[in-house]
Length: 464
Image (cartoon, rainbow, N blue to C red; front, side, top):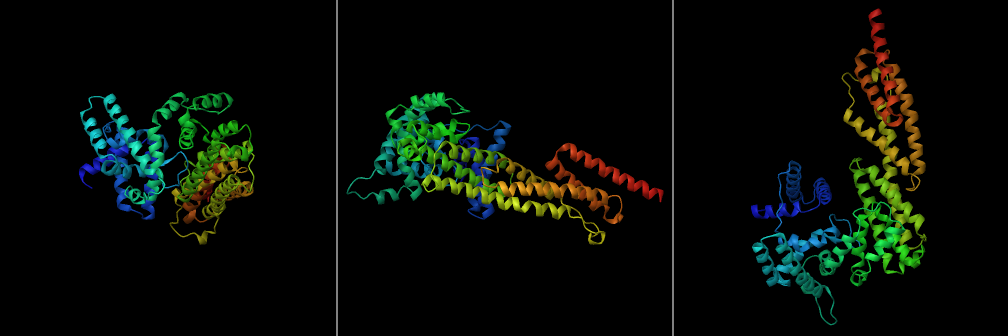
């Protein structure tokens, strides 16, 4: 890429919200690990890391005159950053560049040139915003016209000039959101920045804010509901609006209303969280597992208790599939933990320990994270269909680690001096596991016992 192209890429990436930047970095890192588009992924990762470092140092100011960014700014709340399938109320961020290129080349080239000229001449933010609004309306009309089928007319060739099938799917939603920008922005301004509990009072307020004809259309309603869900601390609670509108928790009555799409949104978002959980587990990253499990647990329980779902319905099958996906991902990892603990703490005869044998303490920390992972799973086990395996594994871990620690401490009192360093490393690992399983007090107690065992052995050796 040339210098100008690289600068444009960096400017574009800098406009992304921090959460979007983090998601994009994670997806690109995964692509590199899989060996997919390594050159492109590394290029974008390099620019993202520069942006993050610069923002942390406070010395980076992104450009504000990028035409495509200003054009598509109303779409920001609805952009999906990953390759995960989109749902109603979402648009692929990857669709924006092809559509901008089509607008400038074929859609409304004169209006696009006028827009860029106006931006170059704009003396302040309000002038740029006025130019953007004018172009957004022109772009919306061109996009909607292209994306709307006309009887007897073959538009396939024209559509193929825009981009891939995913881009074409996003055409009409993009045009309609640009056209309905003011209604969506007004709705956003009337919503609280954060809703901890979506209760009756909040639902009534949101219902009143939604009484705008354009927002009630089947095309824009999913985007309005997405906007609302983003303000909820527990996004799954968006289903309460659908239940309120249907005046029933029966899924057939809820599905019969336009607001039934809220349930589809909640289910899709839970499926996405489950996919993130599965990916993090495969990569051995457990920092966010507790938060993801809580989100899944609360969402699954909420849908199961607040909606009367039938097991054989589409929604019922989808929820069952999500639970099964979570259970399978968790169970396979939970089952592996006892074996990894035993490999580290297994008490061997002196003759079976080679000279200079060591325990990798980074592996000990990985296993400690896995034990903590099992403990977190235990908290949410019942709703996620992993109750039996989690309780059994956690109990086995407690029993094994407790008895192994006691045995390893005793082994410090005697044995071959050649292997004492390895024994001490085993004891250190066991105490670390005790800290996770039984708490700091018990771990401190075992640590003192280990010190006393070593001290007693030294005194005995000197006395001899």
